[in-house]
Image 1 (cartoon, helix red, strand yellow):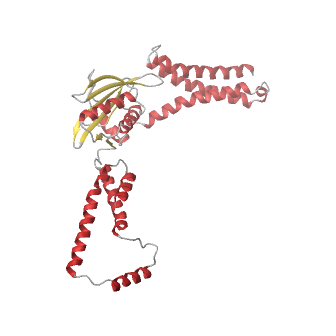
Image 2: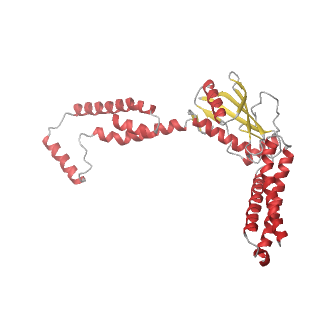
Image 3: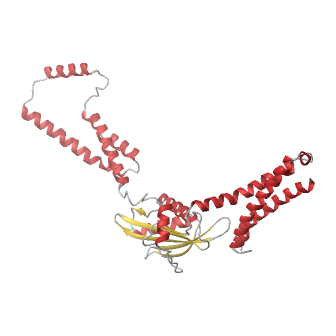
Amino acid sequence: MRALRALAFLLALAALLALLASGPGTRFDAWSYRVGLGLFRWAAYIGLAAALVSVVVLALPRARGLGVAVPALALVIGLATFYVPFQFQRHARAVPSINDITTDTEHPPEFMTQARPYPGRDFARRQRAAYPDLAPVMLHVPPAQAFKQALAAAEAMGWEVVGQDAAGGRIEAVDTTRWFGFRDDIAIRVAPAAGGSRVDVRSRSRVGRNDIGTNARRIRTYIERLQAFGGTLAAVQGPRKESTMKRTALILALAIASPAWAQDKPAADKPAAAQEAEKGEKLQAEPAKPQAEAKDEKKAAARKHSRRTEDARHCLEKPSNEEIIKCAEAYL
């Protein structure tokens, strides 16, 4: 029974060591990435074996009589070392076996330091099926400013920028994965577009056929970082969406605020019957105005309303819809 307990603990320890050594050993070139992936995979097998032996030990009364701490610890370590590679493999099977992802599958950005041909239509088809959300980013800024934003976002991602061409709108960078230290290449292209600039991104793994979704996640994170630098729109489909929302907010604010300045005194608190009676009293008390004079007053009021509405358009310069509404209400 002691031997069985020792076996469970040794298997758990071996699985843990294999798991912990797989990534750093590959990252620091102690062995090839194939050896690192092999250790990673075998950590799961050995961890599962350790968990099974631990369950047997805990199920035997004589073995439990020697204590449950060691087999319980071996069970926890075995399950943990099995779970990590198992989840890794599960994610790998959930995504297509491709390793070159881009926001423009028709004309992918090219790399500057070394020619890396795009795999072709099959990759493009599988990418569109797996990652339909990946699309070019439109910036409402000139290409020169968009290039600076794209470069700043790449540096903020912690990438190693290995090439940049402001005149050509091209950036190349390298990103290193955390565990295995795989070096992946990124190409960024900034080009003029209607209303500003268009930014396309391409991320490609150097090793392995299946990137386990890493390149797509990297591009999504970069796009979010790029948009955080300001002057951006979320996608190509709606380049004027933000402006339309602001104008709508101003129109609503004007519509809400117009009655407030058009009336001399608010009568919202009075019932309808009282308002009608008051209106009748005013009509009886005031002499009838000539028809021409009434028309002139209506025209003057219309011009005043139009002029105030036109002048209130400076509120569109406010950065948010809430400030636009406050500006319009205060102005009117």
